[in-house]
Length: 237
Image (tube, rainbow, N blue to C red):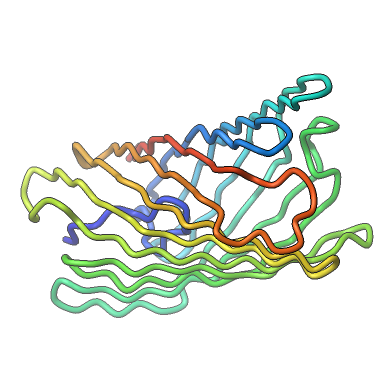
């Protein structure tokens, strides 16, 4: 219906369809001041109903500091649930709002995982037409063991570069912003993330994004130089 694909670094408000399931994986290369990190998460969402989705995420990570030993292994397991609380469809337009909950379990290898439990409560929103998609998500992370909480916010604007056609084939461009505010100590980071996405058919897409830091307030050590993401998504049914 809409000549739009899901945003790349922002949560999507569009469900997969009744009893839909899929797989998303991407490689993210992170260049830091004192080394590099490679992350390969695998996410599997499943729709319980047209309004309710659950799923899990498990990341594989490789950390290579400039000084010290390279370590690799699985990171922390994340389970999530999304529930659609508002939907309004019009001709060539839809507005959707979802509640989003994630629970992070400290299952990761030492030096790879966070080593703490974390609960995320947030909102996902989208206003999508055939000509433009505007997306956002924001939420609060509650951490255990007296570790500081943080607030994250993300925005995305997506524009299709190909006219709406059948069979489905899409080339989309995105401009996205990713923010994170840590309360104690007060650390604020913002990345601008331009990206492209190609959808050759109904069940698969490939996407890439280049993330550049524009704000790294009070980040005193190991600042991020840039991040590169390349990934794919499969719709299983």
